[in-house]
Image 1 (cartoon, rainbow, N blue to C red):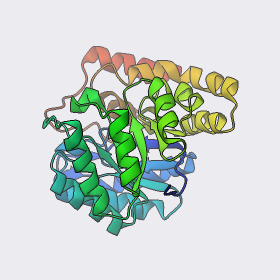
Image 2 (image 1 turned 180 degrees about the horizontal axis):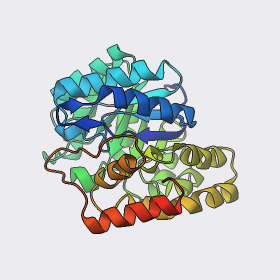
Image 3 (image 1 turned 120 degrees about the vertical axis):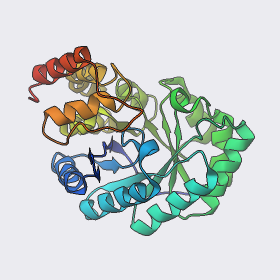
Image 4 (image 1 turned 90 degrees about the vertical axis):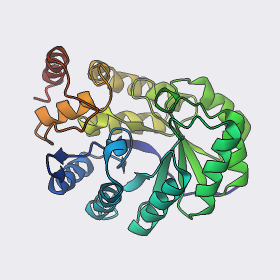
Length: 296
């Protein structure tokens, strides 16, 4: 079985600071530095939370490159490189490799609704085109398709560069079934902040987190406790995050978390259509959650 460098702990699914004129790269660099100083274990630019669907291809590539430059090798960068067009996903993944990213996070193709065979061929084509470790990103709520355990196992067996999985189904049983099928062949990351402790207790090794955009230190601490096997401590550390996690999903991600980051002075709240600013009620709920957490 192919072994890849360890990817474990708390990875932030990074917001992309935007302005009317485009990506704010100065804010991106400042935000990256803040995340690192707070002890985050890794960064994921150009994922769902980074508004990748509305970044231009040029912006997408430069956000990845700028994040790699800003980290200076201090934490791992898992670049979002997925697309519903296989050729574009290959292009993004090759660029991430050239830019110096440590891994690629590749979402299951949205809108097309490929079969399991289509999913296999999509990921195999990407895996064959790069030496970069690839994490499959399974998120049926966004892509309308669910990659089965059998397809994940088939990719793991046939594609040496497939290194792991980000599972955003919320189904903790999948950790057990995948471990049964594959042992330790893949590194398993939760895509759900609320179930991150249970995910690791079932055999996971990390989380790709939304709430760590605003609470990186605390999110990292929860992961470190789970990776030491201290699940009682992890539950206690996770409990204060629960109200804030809930507030991050009142409306479509990344609308709430970007508004929260703006209240904290980490970016503007500029987002691109078809996303729109949160309602007044949502803004009030987010502000209250931040105040309760003493973040503002």
